[in-house]
Amino acid sequence: MNDSNEAATAELDANKEWEKRLWDLANAITAFALAQSLVAGYQFGNPAFRANFTLVVACLSLLMLVLVTSAEIIAILWCRDAALRQNNESLTEAVRLWNRVTWGRIAAILFFAVAPLAGVIGAVISHVSPCVPESCLHSPAVRNPSVGRSPSVTTRSLASHIHARIIPP
Image 1 (cartoon, rainbow, N blue to C red):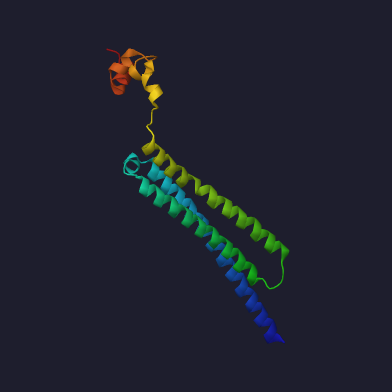
Image 2: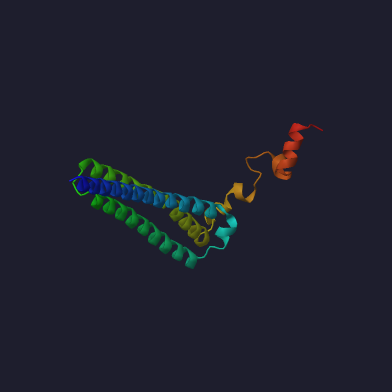
């Protein structure tokens, strides 16, 4: 009788440890999605990177974004299912907790996928269409940049303008 209690306790401890490891794995997957988003935001903010961005690279980037995001979501769902299978009895609190946290993680992963997606779309748009529409090229402000500005700022560099304001001649 005592051996069966010790075995049950050891099995319960092993299940709790396994569930904790799955929880940590799901957190790591979500953290990877955040890191992916930060790196993409930094890269797409770099003009040299965007200058070398072609339509083929954009298509491959979108494909990889979809694949990686899908894999992250599937892995999060797998962690949830594996953790809930470890609980032999139906613990409604554990199920509710895993469901809430899992859907929160999935929402975070989808949110983190927005930055790379926006970066790819922005890079494609900047290559496909000009930054300034043709109709705006004929406006007085584009033809003559000094319209609406002080002529002293447009004729001198910004540094010399600031220098002249701080240290009068």
